[in-house]
Image (tube, rainbow, N blue to C red):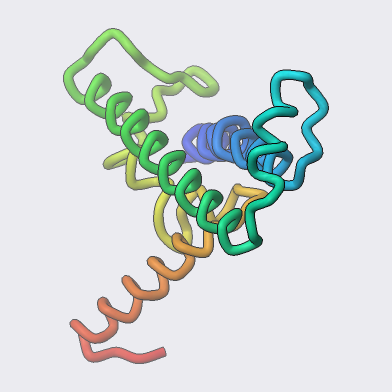
Length: 141
């Protein structure tokens, strides 16, 4: 029943998030070839590994926020029968979710399941949430 939603999630993560992070990794490693990227690569070539990691973390957070906001807007359009609809296999994916913007998060979320670039922050957030739920209900694995 949710196969179109899963297809959309994989497509969204791989073609948006992963492509952006791939280009970021190319910048940070200095392997982009185009003339317009050379000056920027020269500027960051002297950055330490920890500075480059900080840049990656910031960019990842910005990407995730943008994805969340975009998916939220699609969900709102669907909820109010707006003019933007995302169809996969003829089905509106927002109608298959109780909140598209939440599909990207958690240990079973799209980022963790579909991305070539694991999100350490998302994996840790998922572990933290699971621990809090277990504490609330007095359960341990």
